Image 1: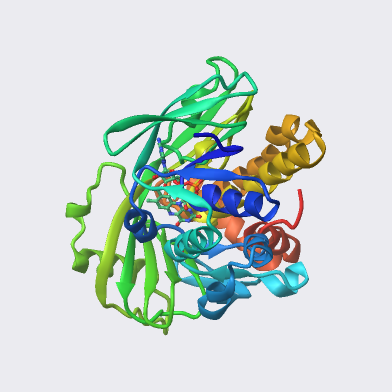
Image 2: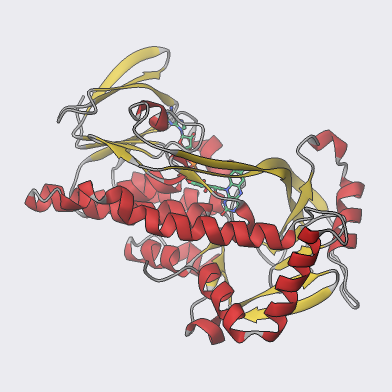
Length: 390
Ligand code: FAS
Ligand code: PHB
């Protein structure tokens, strides 16, 4: 079996790449280790930058997103109960974000791929990559207990942080940058009306919390927890009590309800110094992880794909290999910017030091400066909604 571009992973990165290549008439095929039901049910991100929505619109897959997605023109930052609203649209010439669950994005992209006869082989686990330094690489994968091969011109490893793509970059060919924060995020999806029309990021001496939403009947919350904590340490009442405390401000009423889903995700930064070797290209979480505080993971994956699709299309249409050669540095400009912004938001809102520690004083100072500086608010706003170009 041969295709032009073999894509590993049916997440936002792999699916978007397949749709862009198909739109340009370039054959591709996706190998996905899990079932369709599994990938469409994973509850993860929810914040889409305008660039991401624009890409999905260009691909003709944004119909439901535009009907059901929630456009937000501002965000609320809170520090020990003091609220500050950042009006994105005023500060960035009208740019804004859309709240729409990642599982809904994946459902829309999978449906579009299947409608357009883009082949996705579910429950097909890529196992080994071969001859990536030649013009005829191939993937060995396992499906239905049988080892199979897929020959191709290019391998796009869109297989996430725990995928195999990174493992096949030549040892010593790249620098690993990484840091783990001393806390994780406990995320819940709750059957309750949002307690605020906009997202609220809050610093509290007990820890960070985030109020997000999915619809007028579903809310999404996150709590900072220690890395040693497990889901069983957090029953529903403890979760609601903590959210109540951390989101408190006079007049605020937290709406509670049935918790539909719970997960704990470590907060970390990771990235490789290069995202390619020969005919192997990495995109999305396969190449980088950012702290979720900036709501960037999915958006960064889609930003990589814009570059990768452009490079592959140039190769197939005119034999031009320049964009393939510059793929990593084209992506890395935005990735470093997003790493820095995500680190800034993480440092600002999570409990790191004790009260009156240096860390706490610096956090307090940042928030006080945000309150008085339009320039500082504009910097935060343009990074939060996503830079148009970088
Ligand atoms: P993905 O991980 O989404 O997709 C990779 C795909 O490759 C998966 O379907 C996997 O099954 C498949 N795969 C892996 N190995 C394979 C193999 N060997 N063969 C075949 N297929 C293989 N980002 C935010 O912005 N905000 C959030 O709140 C947020 N919360 C998150 C919570 C969790 C629990 C996790 C894990 C991530 C979260 N993220 C969040 C980040 C997340 O949204 C990612 O950035 C986004 O999924 C990246 O998309 P992809 O790069 O496509 O990777
Ligand atoms: C979400 O709604 O899942 C979400 C929103 C903003 C973030 C992280 C997650 O920074």
